[in-house]
Amino acid sequence: MSATPASLSEGPLPARERSIVLVGLMGSGKSTIGRRLASALGLPFHDADVEIETAAGCSVSEFFEKYGEPAFRAGERRVIARLLDGPRHVLATGGGAFMDAETRALIRAKAVSVWLRADLDVLMARVSRRNTRPLLAKGNPRETMERLMRERYPLYAEADITIESIDGPHDQVVRQVLGALESFIAKDAP
Ligand code: S3P
Image (cartoon, rainbow, N blue to C red; front, side, top):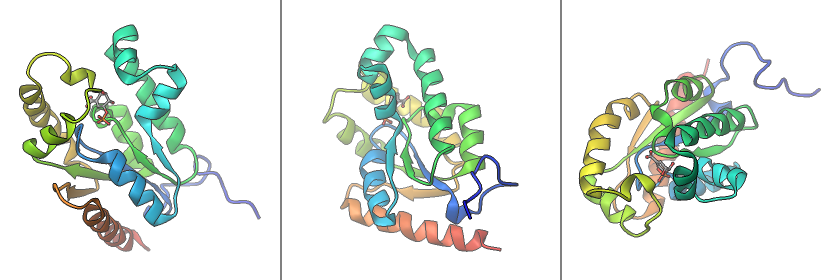
């Protein structure tokens, strides 16, 4: 007997069958932790930024330059909707994705969301290693990051699970996510 596709089944999927979506600011570790989490759970891993880059044939920075941020946000919304319609996986979103009300509602309906929360110093140390973020390319990156924290943290806080993305071994954060997921799934069980 074949399984009923998620989009055709009645009501929300139980938590144990849902994809896991990582949200949080640039430098919070969504891709690094996401890849390890997927491997620990034996699930495929997807990165929304990489999906957009592959589809557009250019980097996120080039995309921002060529088409502007609103076009990027529209692409991000479409990519996440498409992925969440597919089989269970771990998804690292770009830092702004969860700010979009439609995307937030979709993630709430179809996935278990995990906010990787990090302090300003941790975020800055991580993003300063690579110069790939268009939002930090102009002005004072630290001030931009502080503003984004003020604007976004109240919304990230709506995620199902919050984990502190400490400046320590990645495996420790992965273990914490796994533990929190287990409790969340147990609570959701009928
Ligand atoms: C963005 C974060 C980036 C990328 C784009 C915009 C944001 O992803 O989607 O540069 O608005 O915070 P990461 O969070 O993976 O760096």
